[in-house]
Structures are given as C-alpha cells and as structure tokens.
Image (cartoon, rainbow, N blue to C red):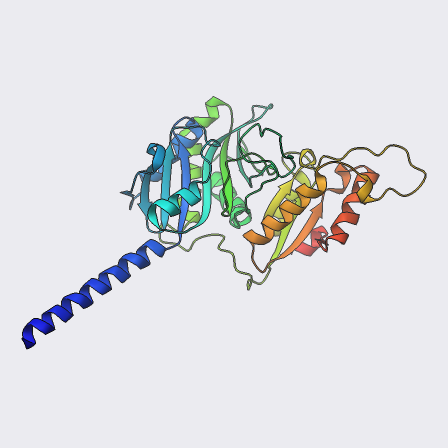
Length: 345
C-alpha cells in the first residue's frame, strides 16, 4: 500500500510538472516574422533565413498559413498579398496560446524612381476617416505600435549592406508610416525596392535575412534594439511632416542613432487651407483629419515605447506658416513635447 501510494503521488507530481512546463512554453513571448509567396522580395529573404540553422516546422494556422520556429521566433508564410492577412498576431495567440510581442514583415518596395533601395517603416493609415477604403490594407484611423527595433536596425542594416557591397548602389532609408495589414503589436516592414530586378536580387535577400537573423539574436549574439525605458537615452522621435522618405527625420536618426516611432509624412496630415484671414488662425479652424492622425501616431508610439519620452520632430521646411502654427498649437494643447535635432542625443 505504501509503495502504491508513493508511486501514485510521484506520477501525479510528474503530470503536474509536465503541465506546468507546457503552460510556460505556451506563455513564452514570441516574435513573428511574416512572408508571402506572392512577392519575390519576400520569398528571397524567407529562403535565405530558413536556410540558416535551428528552424523546425510548426503548426499550420487557418487559411493554410505555414509556420516554422527557432528559439523565440516564429516564421509565418502565407499565399496572399502581404497586406491582406489581418490580425496575424492575435490569430497566432489564439491558435497556440503563445503571446506575441512584435511583428516583422518582409516585403517589396515600389517607387516611381525605380531605384534600388532597402527600407524600414512603421505601418498604419491614421489619417483616413471612417468610410474611406484603405488602398493597401489597414483600417481607417488605425496605426500599429511602431517596433522599437527600427532605429537600431537601420544602423545594423547599413552595416550589413555595406559589408555585402550594396552601398551606394542601394539607398538605405526609412519610409513614412503607411498601409496595413492590421496588427496590435509593435510592427515594422523591411522591404527591398524598387523593381522586379532588385526584388529578386539574392545579395539583397541575403542582407535582409541577416538583418533579421542578427537583429533577433538567432545567431547567438545579443538581439539588437530591445527597448528599455531605463536605457541611457529613452527619447523617441515622432516624425511629423516631410516627404515619403522623411529626409529631415533621417538626418537626425542617422546622426544620433535615436529610437524611432511613427513617421507621419505630409500626406498623412490632411489640412484644409483656411484661406486669407486678418486674425490669427486657430488649430481648431483647420479642418481635416490631421489632428486624429497625430494623436493616433503619438498614442501608438507611447504603446511601442512604454516609459519613453516621446518628442515630436517637425520637418519645419515642409509646412506653410499656417500649417506649422496649427500643428505646434495642437501639440502644445495635447501636452506633446516638441524636440529639436539636438534633443535626441
């Protein structure tokens, strides 16, 4: 009797320990890297990345989305356009019980210039109003929290691209916040541009794969760009204004290597010209969704950088006087600090 009781108790403890291990495994925070088979600038880096050691097949999600695992990274591959699969972070959590802490998409970049480029950018369409149809996915008024790795990864991307002799042939740059798909976790896109010739370049695909491999610490080194509000510099640049490639914000980011949040170009700040006025024009007099866009960009940047000091950096030369005055007035009223280039060091 004594022996039977002891064995039963031992087996119960083993079962309990196993359940605990399985629960802890399910609760492990994971990072999603997402690619699509419809895009050569996505499949190229995907093949390069999955050829590196440590990957194991994982579960298949709804809609036939394949997965592979490597340490705390989960690689997802689907067969739709990259902006067409919404809520992959939530769908992964629901299917596996593993909470997602960030999402990284691999995609192509297109540009009128057709010039070769490697780009990084946050996502969202915060300037669109209800009823608008987003041209490239997302949801009107929505923006995903920016992935804190963007700033440090821009520095790493430059380094890897130079070591593979892609610079100066390829421009290495940020893009402004744009398009979907919908996510709720800190997210960024890494893209190869700008034509099919460059989308299929194996050397460019290798550089993007190495960026993910080294940046997430899969090669054994420390991950690059882990956010901590306790870091020596916890100031985060919230870009407002400028063109799609945010050159004034890029100047600050390249020089100071700062943390990077949402980057709103001029087209994400719709402002209706109030026309001639003899008196001072108030921010409240300027119609358009620009206020909603700024507010969404600020709130999601705070979410992506908990405890960080968010500073709005304005591309002053891109605004007309009335625009700059209205934006500045709104930022002050919202208690959003404005930073000059030297404030991000």
